[in-house]
Picture 1 (cartoon, helix red, strand yellow):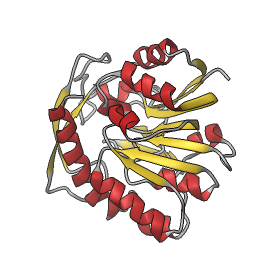
Picture 2 (tube, rainbow, N blue to C red; picture 1 turned 60 degrees about the horizontal axis):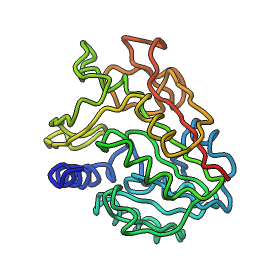
Picture 3 (cartoon, rainbow, N blue to C red; picture 1 turned 180 degrees about the horizontal axis):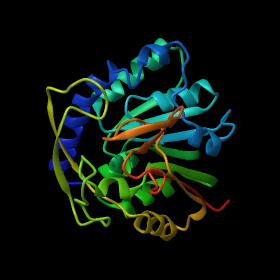
Picture 4 (cartoon, rainbow, N blue to C red; picture 1 turned 45 degrees about the vertical axis):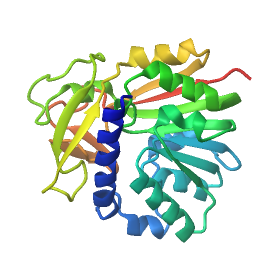
Length: 265
């Protein structure tokens, strides 16, 4: 990632963090009282995490990291936003948990963290902030212990092709280079009076899977879902608890996919 893109996105996520901590979307007060941020999809894939060493990449302000710690995992969260990591550490201390947090650009993580993990976990809106899937896959492989698994739950790349109003295809499915955009507010409630600039990339499923296979990882699951657990897009309709679909398309398009890949043991 170029220094310019890194700084643009770090500033964007610092500003988003301030909004998200006060939002109903993340509901930090309920989280403090014991609410779990993990959804049905990732709970089913993660299984029993007690005693597992888990590396959570692009953890934002740590709700999933801390939810995993509450369930008995030994968690290390990583994020590029210093505001998010400060908030994560504060919540960790406040709730008496033992998660650890590292603030850095994901590609520079080997300069900041040693060791290997039983699970590398990352979810929902993560890969689009990274320009190079080969380098990402190298990081995943670097931190997986023998027999360890990557667990990726991500919004489907089809989602990012549409314009915000879901009226036409605006972007390519394939990675054609950086996409610079300005968003009014963020995907949560709050911050509607702010303009936030970001840089992103779209990565098709083939690009993601091939990058992992090139690292010698074994693909064990690739599952697509016709709903999102989050009400974070235009024109969504709620079909069940924590299940939303894009109203114009119903159940015809995948909104999320889950990928599991393992390192040989």
